[in-house]
Length: 260
Ligand SMILES: [Ca+2]
Image (cartoon, rainbow, N blue to C red; front, top):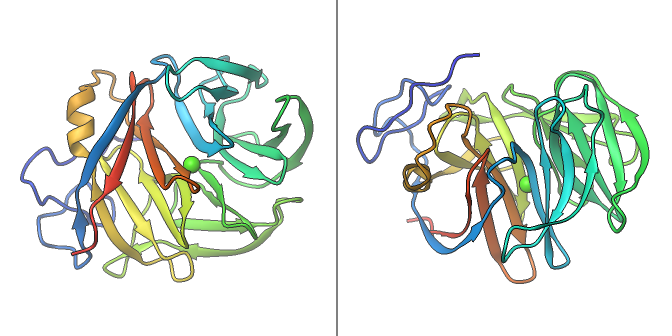
């Protein structure tokens, strides 16, 4: 797959169907900045595919064959508190919480693993069709991305598909939707190989705002082209939003500017 030749140009550079070739002011949705509230260490060997916050800790899933796992991570020092290895032949992907289980996807294997949130012991597996990318929960369904514009709503127990909604920006499909986080009725998503998050109305798929996190990308200054912004976690109790990237040394707490 081809990395989008994004956008280190002007400050308002945006966002078309692929984020790769758009000019400024082509989008009608607000472009929001974010302020950095805090920085924490992040495992620079973690190829971050899923991130969430639960009960005082981060949970993270990582990718790459032979290096995929699901882990509980201490926020303040980035230390791995517990870890469950995924089959070395599988490439781990998105991560969501459902009741007392973590559900983690695999990229090409069509297998979702279910883990006990306390022990990180494997409990069961589900099968699904297609690629696994990001995963989150709205409290009713698991919401999954697969690299296309589609958000797939799945039964959280069986992973059977309930419906799908295509993400659009300015009425055009937006593909490469990657890691996801459900925040107060909206869906935040990474867009693969970009320095932007998008905020999506999960009912319609419409992008309602773009969040420009290119200053974080610039600060990290990764040299590996796959070390992209990926991973969003929401601490609903304390209203804290965390973001990081694949192989990034830093996890950021950020605050998104209000919609103008
Ligand atoms: Ca997430």
